[in-house]
Length: 86
Image 1 (cartoon, rainbow, N blue to C red):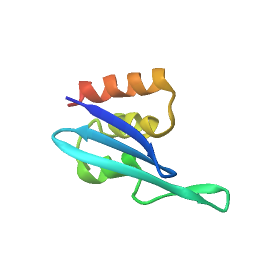
Image 2: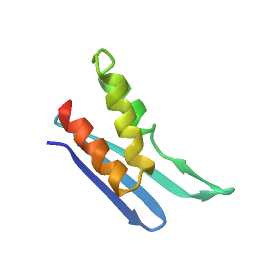
Image 3: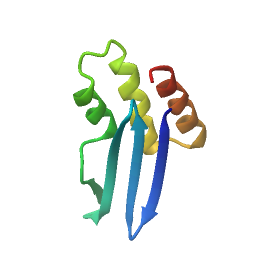
């Protein structure tokens, strides 16, 4: 089962994705010179690294990327896409 959690705490935004029995996280830190810096690679890049030989990696990575910036409808659609590849 795919699970996605986004929290806002002490000025940081943390996204956690549970996918294929693994946990991937992305923490966007405090604002620095007008932009947020992430502490990890993007969720899409983490999935590309974890599953480099998956035939559907482009679709999986694209869906994971939407989780970071999408609105509710886009995030829901991205989760459905990921569930299809779970």
